[in-house]
Length: 518
Image (cartoon, rainbow, N blue to C red; front, side):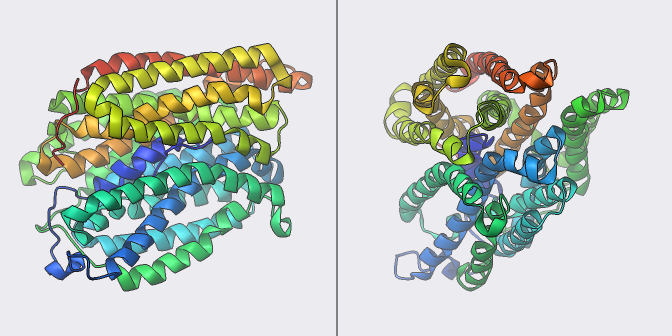
């Protein structure tokens, strides 16, 4: 939830930030009231303090998910050494979570509408805690990858319920304050995740090396389950809905057919079956579209509301989210590999190096929403893309100039510029995308937005095989550090190109900020 912004290699850093807001809303923002007594709103007038305890529970779960996304990548080199994991497995430790999260978000939101948001939240946080334990005690890379997939799937049940629970728990006049707190939690998670991961890895608690980054979730998760059972009020959609199981199977299959061969292709020598799967995924997506159209005509409860794509701003915004996720997926993973393997830095040094980036994102995000977007509209997002490109070019120049002797303070200026650019994009983008969406479809739209973010992130992580390891693999073993440095610069040029495409695509977004319909 997912994101936003993490430091080293937290691929969903920015994704997590807006994912934290848009995905959590995916369950059913359009439902104005729950199918429970109005006391479910905890008094509405401010007398019932239980709702604030419920808020603390769901906020903690959102924080735990965001930190878990951003905490892992900083420990990747330690995981690689301890488990003897291949780079393909390393990619799946990050991409697998994002893929399972993306594939399950829409389904998780719909399940909350049907069976109860509190129930799904408790199932999700319980499963997330169990999966964290499995990750922490993983005996090998295969078990860790499988546990990360389970963790992502459980997050997909937990995260979409967060803003829905807030929506039905707090009256309208209090939600501004609550969402402000929510934004602060997202910012705190983006900064603290990489630092916490670096500290836990560096301290090597009880000789467990990287494992505490997962095990730390256990007491938090158990407390969340116990307090959630007591303080969260149950709510459901006011009308009966049906789960589109065929749609779930088709969308999950299409994602797996695309991402799996892309991630494993380099390690397996790019086999023919991989190319067939990637091409075949387009056919599965076409079948999904055809089925969802038929499903909408038949009973009005498709998994994906295809009519949303007739809204120009939404269609363009989803394309921007997908492409932006690709850029982030490439940058954050390559960034960590560059600092910790290419430059030989410790996890703590790498984590501290990313602090200026995270702080710049937080500051710029606040300014963009409160001051800039209401006045300048779409131009703020485009300025963010150009600012990120400027930061990347500065980074390429610094990496080329100083080589393997580059220091953290020499990285700070480009990281500040990049962070400022990202902050101008991630905070207002979801609102811009949803601005033209009818109120009754805002929940479905939010789910689609976050799913495409996570899918783009997983795709970007898969592309690391091409844009980074394609350079590294051509170098002799005795020049591996130089190869990682060169691969990093090469990958940054790819990110620059992707951001240039994003800048162009943003012309299809609303030129001025419109009233939120959701």
